[in-house]
Length: 195
Image 1 (tube, rainbow, N blue to C red):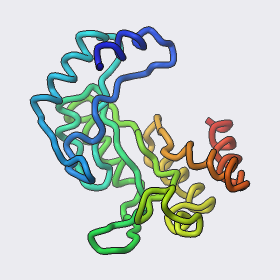
Image 2: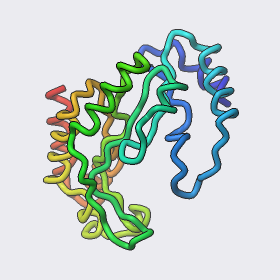
Image 3: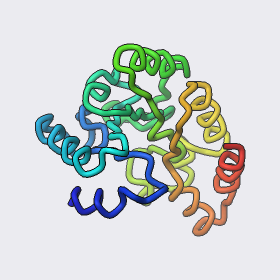
């Protein structure tokens, strides 16, 4: 499947890089299987099919120093989550890390490996105790609302990373179309207009 996808899209002008796997060095969630040899083969395949675009390897922004991602990828992608549900302790947790926490690690990766770090998942949607479609909007807003959205964007910009991908577009659209709340959608439009 990788071969077909790369060959189909490698000449698309919208393509900026290939993210191979999602946080492959972070054993989390329902897919803890990992195989470093398999990952290296995937990366090698993508590079052989499209040497013109960088391979992005993502890693946890909160629980990793990104060393392994930098060793494998051409670009390191990091997550930036601010408030999430921790099922292990049955409560929401707000990460205490300041923007400089990401900026300094990005500088270290640049110095040690000559690799760029980008934000591949900036939290712009809720992370609750269940999947979004199984919890109320009231519960969703415990980890993401308009005020938190604005703060998360400011936080991400303050890291100094020049590429940031927001995680949550489907949720803003759902709020607008299904719940009649276009506040997130409109704020996102402002963010994109400023970019």
